[in-house]
Amino acid sequence: MMIYRANDYKIKWLLCGLVLGIVTTLFLPKLLLTNQVTLNTNLEYSNTNIERRFAQYSKWPIFLSDLSYDINAWRSRCWLNQKTLPTENSDQYYKTNYTKYSVCQKVIGEIKSIYDIKTKVAEVQYPSAFAEKIKKIFNNDEDLYAKALKQELHFVINKYSFEHTVYNPLRGRRPVQQPEVPIDQYLKETMNKTSQSCDLCNYQNMTAMDSLGRMENRYAYSAANAFKFDQWHSMFMPREHDVTKLTFEQLKDVYTLAWKWIRAVHKQSPAHRFPTLLWDSLPHGGASQVHPHIHTTVHSDHYYGQFESIRSTAEQYYRDYKSVEGHQQTNYFRALQDVHAALNLSLSLGGITVFTPITSRKEYDIVVLAENFDERLIEVIYTILQGYFIKLKQYSFSSCLYLQPLSSKTDDQGSTPVYFRIIPRGQASSLLSEVSSLDLLSIYNVNTLPSNLFAEVATWFKPK
Image 1: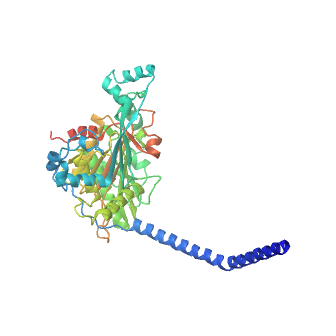
Image 2 (image 1 turned 120 degrees about the vertical axis):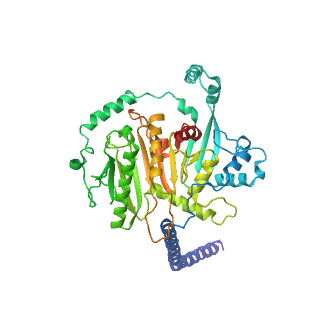
Image 3 (image 1 turned 90 degrees about the vertical axis):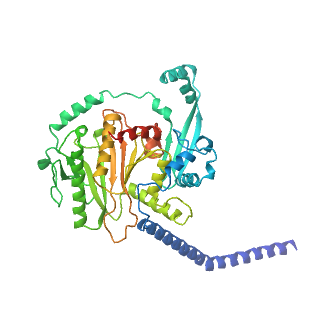
């Protein structure tokens, strides 16, 4: 009996294996093929979405430099005018009973719609010998030493662009190696030495031209870049070799000539619609030549990646809030302006707004938004440059100027304001780099609060 039962079990298992083999052979390939088709369909659908989002923009409300709320009502009913950044602790930043006022609710909602702002405390313990050294750094100021033991870190992230900045003002008090050559001496020696053999001074013989030929006016001239990074890429320079001696009239001629070339490019090739002007000052700022020169390009299809990402951010913000009842603003750039005005970080100059961004990339980061590219904007840029040179002693910098898209048949879809930004590049005579792995690969590390910089910048534009 045991033998027969064992044989029965073997037969049953053989039959089960046979049936499973037949099912696997007949149906598994079809199942895999169906899944593959579904997977391919999803991939195609995903790729289509990515392409459509990149290529299509809405027609946003026009950018205007005036605020979309009553700033006086905000200041009198809501904001305590602190010299820091608002966090989740509303008692420190907003006035009593602020929630009953609609202007407070709307502006705070606008701030929160773009930014996440938090303050965290990092505790530090110093051995006695090191503690004495730290105290000397603070000139034996007990309050500063107490802050060093419990350091406040302000984190600000833009929830759309993911620009992310951490502020720790105490880091700005760290001992830093001073340049071996004083900045005034470096500038004088560098200008004297390089002016003797400057290719850009000898532009008629030592610079290239593009198909539009050489352009010149009283104080400026053009030259094609010998090693281009775009199809339409030229440079515009003042006749003045020393950037610190640049006058307003000279800078105006440089920008005027660049604008003339941009329009000539677009006339010859209407597909090229996106003008960019980039300026690096002095070798420490990334310039290959000491002579000031502004790289100017006109790109087709879209802006370069970094500004196109901001433009894409603006589109996403518009889509998120265009149908939200009571939301202050759907033009992203105007919303940025609203936020920085609320935090006392912006200055309105009639069609032009200057602000110190709460997602700064370096200590003296300044942004300008303008309704138009005109002489008044050039005056603002020149004033900022003079402030950099005379007040901040920052001679090495990098800046961008993105002009509005040139005419098209898309009815001004995705049309940005004129956007200027300038960022310092450290001491011109220093061997130390001004950036680190933090700035390049993780988070912007800034040691001065935007309110401190704005207090200085505001003085540059006071009537004389």
